[in-house]
Length: 341
Length: 264
Image 1 (cartoon, helix red, strand yellow):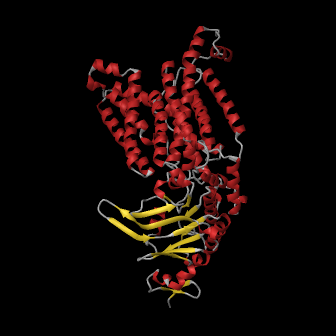
Image 2 (image 1 turned 180 degrees about the vertical axis):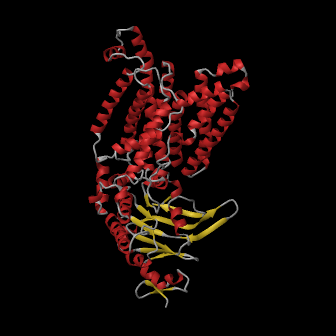
Image 3 (image 1 turned 30 degrees about the vertical axis):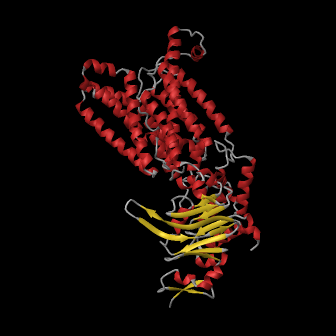
């Protein structure tokens, strides 16, 4: 708290704006900066299609990237503090495996329900619903266990066990699924930021905003938890209530993001560590906004890379985040020897 | 002792401590009647496994008493909610803190949490209290150091400063001198004695450093298999309480020096 981070924050905000604009400017169709800008502020671009591309494709995609990056980063931060474990991420509670299970049941299991019923279900909202429901159910089980178990570490392991169980069910389902169904499931697993309509983004944003607000309310309990649960209790903190609130915030953020954009790997794990390199503090009052900015920036950059400027290829975003995220974690471990958090 | 010091901060009435499970109740100690007065340094001593930790856990409301009452400032401990209790009792535990990336100042400032607003902002007064706690523990030069850079002795001092910043009538420390060398054991206990006098807080600690405790404490609580006795150290020596503390085959208490000697 003695240090002043104002300049770092200003720099990050500028970088975020640059990345946001760069992300919108780059894409399979090359559009001049001037036209991108005028489309953004609602004026006409030189070509009508350019305006359409910017307003209905690139802008929603960039906004999704900001939501996904910041949301996953923050839920990673919450989990790392709650579980006192530098390797915790938003998915340790089984959120992504629950979502995968829901989606796998709908896509791979649809054969069981018959043709018409299946096609009804495999619409986009059907998949979003299945993913939300899946992660919600797995999370609910973890929550119920967490009310009984006093030890936070046990919850972490139970979350991992749930992940194993759902992974096993998914492999059984894929064994019986057809090639086409398998492909569809794998495509969902690639993750995607670009397929959301404005309506979907609005829904995503609403739940995301609730998650962020709960995270902000949790800043003080999170700082208290830095001392460990027994000390936190001696400072008057209601551990069970705080734990529940933090888990709910994480599941709202990570659960909805996974439902809409697919499982995005490594962002939740790597962003908090990257942030701690720049902001050498454990104080969540500084870490939370910093993780927000870093998450959004990194996600925009990953998406720009995935888009392969001026080409028709779009690489799976999940692969890019892993390619960026995993080396970051390795680099941090090698450089610092120890993950201090 | 002057009369201003007579106010009793913590008192137990026929307290029984132990554990209950579905099958049976294990009594660790019963009929514990102790009274901790304001501004006193009190040592809790006893052999391993005699129930020191159980007593501390009960006094700090980690577990419930089997029988009897604990009164803090004449009010039953059960009628305090967590936040109120945090304003009258602070702890220094044996466990390590989770994040050693905190600076010493940040660590001590977390002691102000029961008093700060929803986001934990420190007021001018909070910062004053934190700085005062750092001064009282001679940590002011280290306040910008990270906790992982500190030695065990310095870290223990920082934890004590954090408890001071919590500004409670009562500070309870669970074996604050373990892992420390002989000099720092004496240093920490001497510091506690100074703090009890200076701040007029009641400080209770459990320890195995019996000879140091005899020299420094105003009162000792001695736990033996049969009873829990509490009195001034010299009176306890006269009563021969320390002879009953351990099995007699290896060590014996020497009344003249106030310490244990190995039998030859």
